[in-house]
Image (cartoon, rainbow, N blue to C red; front, side, top):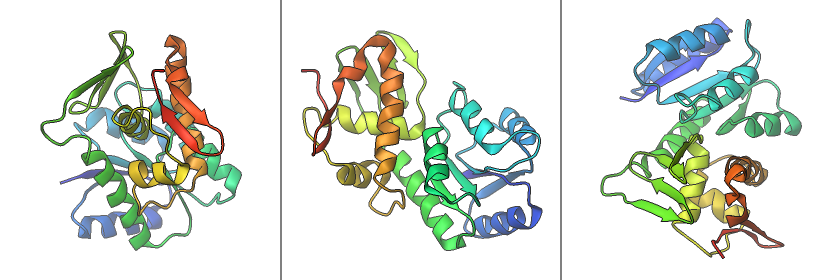
Length: 230
């Protein structure tokens, strides 16, 4: 049973989500501010996904998001940000800060469920049995353990960053448009737009930059992106 942490300070909204997801077979844990969410994460053995409100008391959802994505222990947990801030700049800020998806309020429960299932399904595709270890130019990708090392050093990446790099490293020297990357990495039933690809590519390049590997992630003008050791 997948465990979902809801971080939402408005009790009626939190309870509504909790009741709906529990009825859909999820194990649901609730936190009502940013500090309580950190306590839950420290005490729970495993959280499979986080639903995170932006406007929270004690610690904002955006600050908590950035903190979690910089944490070696928690940055692999996929996060869907929930917020009444629905402007494009707000959505991009959330995605650029590490959110795997962004759902403006108000939203339909069925849409929330679809996004949760889509995100969990994409993650599970990379933890199937009989996966191999791939090594290209000093980057070693363990698909089974969802672990990346560069020149022998463990690198912290989020779930979506891992899936994107895994896709590129298993499709070397091929050019993919933003639309194709959305289909293959985020899923054809994903609700995010093509700008999300650019944001995630930018984050991944920053992660690869200290070792010079950002040069492998190339922009092909007018076409999209490719991963190439050439």
